[in-house]
Image (cartoon, rainbow, N blue to C red):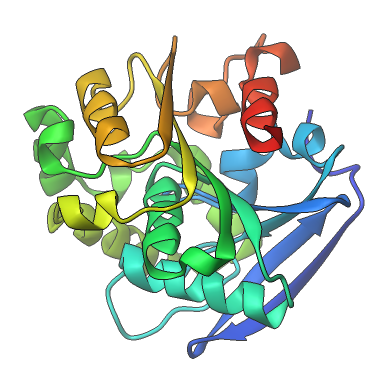
Length: 262
């Protein structure tokens, strides 16, 4: 299943000095979708947008330097991404929304909860990594020594498909790599300050360890966690973890919807 046949509105909005690309699907209570690092809306969420948009208005964004969104003369940060999404919601006159963020997008979702608590109803933070000791040392080693050749081909293809400028692709890759090479822990005080209800979802063979997700669920005052069999984003049909024979029932959409509707 893909998003090609779905009706949606797309546009650009001026936020904090860049033009941010967004797509809006469906009707109902707003749910913001924030993609993972190096990704586009479709590579992260293309398989679940048709399911989630049946009962919700989805506001799907592309973050700084990603896909169709502009760039600024600065490195990427979760804080800046959070401020950009907050500015977009203001421009779209959305006073409050639920937020689903995957991977780096989940970190951004939690930064929105920290920096802009008035904007957040509930948050689904999927496959997040909030502290360096939450992943195995090999992960950080891989990030430090990585090259664009190791970037998943699906991400490169998706970027060029919507933004056919290989120099911008290279810039995006380098900025994403730098963010992880120089990754700093989310301080405990920030995590404890989150007032929104949070569902932490992680694969049992994910980047972050189950122990990390458990520890973070204890720091966030109102948090629940779900560990699902599979890798990084398998439960969302994320493009790099997509199985050829996958079915809609393989995705964690019913669980996400249950949490958001409680």
